[in-house]
Length: 305
Image (cartoon, rainbow, N blue to C red):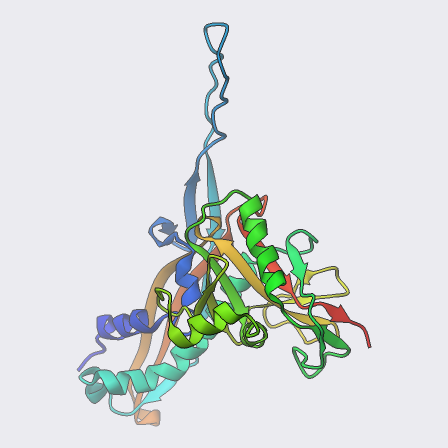
């Protein structure tokens, strides 16, 4: 039986973003992908409003529209040896067993890359700091000093920033690293929601606070204290001043796009006594606002050793 691409591709689509469901909460630009680039039309400046106009005719202005573009990244799995391709293609569970490790790795990497792209950087008004008591729990084995715990006041400041940006009250999201999330459990309302599930959960959501739907994952984004809150690229080497970070945003301020998904196979390779397969996913993300309205980050407060 020849490789049935549509079966494997559909399985990947069904499991993509598991564990990183927050990726789906941004604006979806998948329909605007052309080859490896997103081409998104952007409306020009809003018209001017005049109260009690006293002279006619009004000044005619032409709206100048622009185009937002950003590229997709290519994520590929290492090849895997399949010894019985026919049986796998007729068994969903067996295909999932083969794919799961590879897709989980892709999901984790895409989620981290999206969080990095959506996070603001290097601004005191955009990268807030936690203000709780000092904790010896550090973001990595290299880090030194102590970090400050996350408080409800810190999260409130994130929500307030979104309010001051005058973005929509609905579709607001907060993505926290796991350790920062559990630091918040001194908030009685949060505990009641967690145990009673008194809110209308969406896929992957764990809670809601200050009108923001909460998602957690092991790592969201990291910031370097010495570089005044500059976010660290995914995969960058650990540093002694690293600080964990969280992001909050309104849906219309961020976007992601899914492009091609492909499965490759060398079938019935004699020297391997089976078929060799790999997969490719094209995916990209973008912070849509050059003024960073509707987006804010929270990094751990840093205390030098």
